[in-house]
Length: 482
Image (cartoon, rainbow, N blue to C red; front, side, top):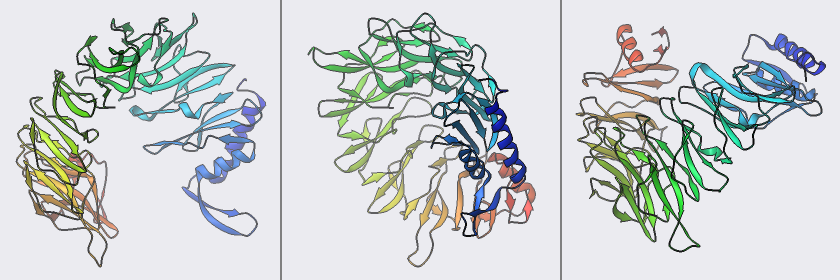
């Protein structure tokens, strides 16, 4: 379909009409049916409703991230499609594929496939990615910074190939579409592929590894923090020809004994990229495997609790015995509690201290260095924060008075600060010298900075904390722009 076709012109006129009617405001009053009632409707609602009346439909899923709402509208009868970003048209096509739209974090990029002239292309914010012409496109992934894009395509000589930011890599008989993984720095790409023999192998930067296996373990492919090493889970034959075992392959070498199962998403490199840990199941035993060696066994683990210290020398995790959770650090076992706060296990910057949030008897409290702190009704999101010098520890707690609304407050070194109606729990920060602590609190209609348990009133100090919190702007006490 040509962009000059009647369908594209019709879409343009419809969008232009709706834009002309509603441009310049966030919400509008429109009639509902014939009863004269009105309700607030967003621009996106009006535009989608208008397009649907004209014969276009949208996939129920609307991708939303960082205020970006991406919608693919396809005509029910004609080869006419439109991609909208925040209600504004980004491009007109034969077909669009909402299930493959990908949001990238650098410069608010939208990556998506669409068909023009019976050929599928991949677009970045409406512009074609070089050399992206293919019969089909599948599984678009982006690097963390969004500057690299990879996706599966058809290979002209048969098989499946990977297009990495416009460069077509060598084809394979099959590719594990969910295994496409960029390194943290975005400079390397790895995935698992299979040859015509049916055996699987890892491909890193278009170079196949030598190790071959029956299959791979889904959710187990991880780059090291320095982006130089790769580990993944492989499935191999056991001594019983009808059974299989799972192993971990690192740097093209079989580095662990066979296990019944490797814990999904459990591969954890140390910060210096030299050590690797994961959880493994063998019979009725569950292990943390560190540097290839199984530690003491428990019934289970808390997901995503495997932690190396910042200096990479210490290791801790949360194990489960019966209905109780207990921390294991350097093979030492701490006291058991009813449960634990998700993703709260935290080492101090100097690697000497360890803390987490425990839940016991319906209350929440911090266990720091093995010692219990005061108990509260609940704890706020944001986790635990050590000061840069590792001396101080702070977190958000929540209390629910019997005759009142819940209140938020900071607990620093086991001392509770003044409570407020609400708080932005992501803003808690220590100063670089570790002497001061601040966060953004909310009371009634006003928001303000609280520093060392006192409300900040000077503009300069507010600006200091907002810069440290990386917040571009915040209204101080409801009447002053910081």
